[in-house]
Length: 126
Image: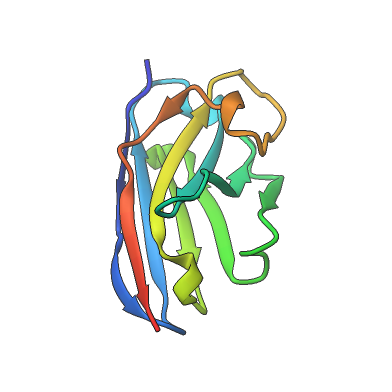
């Protein structure tokens, strides 16, 4: 079983930055692909970023590429999302997710992820 707890959300002005953290429990965290998704009101959940278990591979959604950076610290069981140059359209609830297929490939489809955090609100004022 894996439990995920996000933190770091809040209110920021357009052009600003935020860093989200996701603390994970579970001894096999280091072997899972970890991802970030977001969901704005009235919209479907959207892929933001994911990182492989080895940290050698990352993937980003087109709308955040070049502005967001995903990273992980396996020793601390934590994955991060550094968000720079934030835009109003980045406003959403951000979710951390784990794909528990051990040493799996990065997936952009939310249905590949079987553990989810409760979400953290990010609001970007224009």
